[in-house]
Image (cartoon, rainbow, N blue to C red):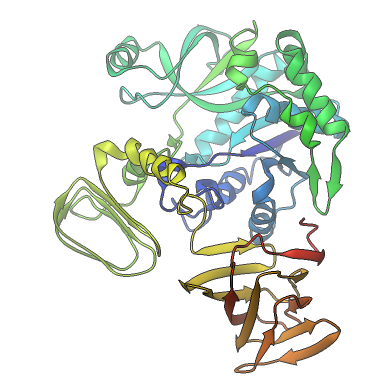
Length: 471
């Protein structure tokens, strides 16, 4: 039996602003270790004999970042399936199950969110082994986390009779996130686990149950996959068919209705890292209970998280604070109000601001660009192009550009003229000129770009040719 990990990477992580943003959400950030959360999710499966390469379902806008992060850890996914819109976990699982069955009629799927933390890998692998036996016995299994507090931020699973010697239980019911009074009752009863959102089941059995309870979801997913297309290393679902698919979770669509729902009790050091307070909980603390990262000065500070990304941060005489600094935003919030950070992103959206969408450094498949300065009719950017990569052949209707090479070698095309530029050399791209920037060298190319014109938005790009098939 081959077990296929399916990694769901569709979350936005709004409560982890200002680090987590729409274009670079929490699962693509190194928050809990030196690797990103999606990299940790994949790598913690290494060493289990029955686990194959992953299949990833992700947001279309994150496809190049996902592919690059997998290359960084030498993992080649069997497929990266692109969701044109988010439709919750049941359609994502259906797409993965349909795709896996085309490869292996006996495929078993281990469904994992890309943004969870698991500190005890050995215990996690043991739980997977227990779950595999439950699947052989005909169960659709989920992983229940043994609770140690009356947590109101998680759903709960009430468990029933024991189904096998591994300690797998029948699921009595799923419970939505409770208020504190009910959470305390659940904890005291000893009959409940936290709902981890991780699943293990036969692909065919899951689809059979989905057909029974939500045939509308299954039909839409079959159409989206059948009418989809390959795009470079990605599998692009049909936009219209998938957009027409109802949104629903695996719990609601299948697990609450099937007679075969089972729960595996686990104590694996799990956390879904839903807020900055969770990172304080799991982080390495100093003698004063502080979790610190970056250039930080503390004086008489206790039980706080302070994270500096781009400059020095000093905190004096504070307790139970969360302080997070990025190049364009600073968050200061009391630890017990960490869930309220979402109010900031709601404010930014309402006021048509961009700080919830992008960092000052924006990643592209060819490298990245970073805003340095902006004023009336001008903008300055720092641009890095990876070795061997090139930007699209393009033109702008409203702006001209000056490029200065800081390091590396640039191949520049302006209309039909091609030139090589090295350190301290520059060129000018007049408005309306067809142009392209390429790094033909073996080291990263860094340039400074000065834009000038009546409109400087990123949507003023007309692409004539693009290696990455962007429109």
